[in-house]
Image (cartoon, rainbow, N blue to C red; front, side):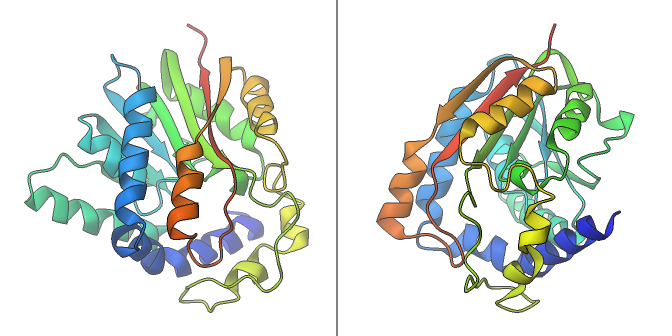
Amino acid sequence: MTDTQARITEYWAGRAEAYHREHRTAERAKADRAAWTDIFKRYMPEDAVRVLDMGTGDGYIAHIIAELGYAVVGVDACEPMLDEARDEAELRQEEGINTPLFAEVDVTDLPPSFYDFDVVVSRYLLWTLREPTEAIRGWTKALKPGGLVIAADATWFADGIAKDTQVISDNGPDSFVLTYTDELLEELPLATADSPEAYAEVFRAAGLEDVEVVELPEIAKIDEEFGTPQGHESRPTFLVIGRKPA
């Protein structure tokens, strides 16, 4: 793990508990879950069975897709986030809900044991990667021919990060700005992208076909109604979808 990746992983480790709590108990939590459930209902292929959730974090999207009936594996390099995901899985299993499996894996270096999936998904991951094109090339190896990559993201920091940004974290409220410095942002090609097209170009460069961008105005409506989580600003959210050549 590089020093840069270690800094990023440490930041998300400090955020794990609060991040998961926001997903479960925030005022907007019910509306968010309904919206993301509807989004993945719409765009998952009807014949898909196995789904790989990259950068699963606390398992938020993995749990949503598993509840829709798919066999899901969520992978992440941040152990405290995975602890939250597994705790959530135990609670859901007690309620008889279909749950994902989780594994500690580098999303930029998938081992062959994580191949043969119908769909690879991610949410709010690509902006954090130093080499997103190379990462997605690796993801395509996990896909069957004709399989899809479906990634949700936003143009988060086209104007940089406000220096007074604060978050809820075990590492302190200023941990975000201390981690995502101007110097670090320069290492993350999509962090300061000003258009979804930058993400689409990464998909094309990685060899995916039929690449499309789908705007998600329903997420902006939730931001408007409930406000954004601490440390966040509302940004246009979108899916980028691409197909592995058959």
